[in-house]
Length: 116
Length: 114
Image (cartoon, rainbow over all chains, first blue to last red; front, side, top):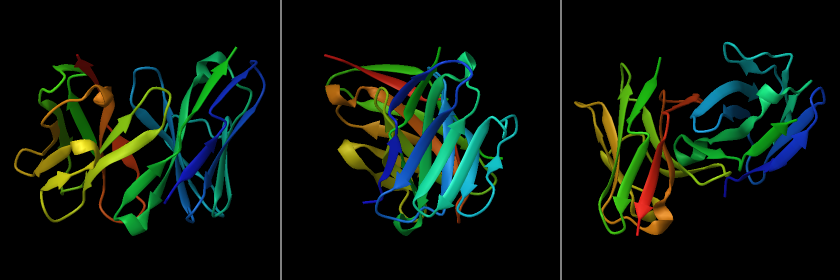
């Protein structure tokens, strides 16, 4: 139980285009979703926190106009990388808290974005 | 602010040997502590977590960790390494209660030598 399905698993796009990443909670309601970015051989860095029905909260240094987050329902949160550039190439992972499991968090399987 | 330090970005052990991955945290009050494992190009899988109660926490795949408040540590151990344990391991910390964001350590890559 408590599965977050993340799609796509990998995507290659051209510079200047936009890419949408989806995270769906399959068997629970995710009122909150955390979005992380992981550069090669580095740890996960929190980008933003999305809450269903309200604006996302972005971490310092993260461009909110570039990384658009939408959390329109209790089971779906999306991250759109707009006008992607090669430096946006990274591994993006979503995570949702599962409060009925004692403050555990479930993670999506990640999206490998390569911008060429 | 919470922070977590993992000593050693790479650890190599022989198959069957003890695995010890170190993690120290910085917090004014005891936080929630986690260990996650990540296989290449995959998301993170929870190994174990400490929230309250018994300080020795047992997780999946034979791993366990002990919360030591006096040392602000949460080291991960496994008595006997298996080849399938080769992966990257992340220690993480969050504040107690509610939907708190998780802060991750820099990760330790575990290599298991046959």
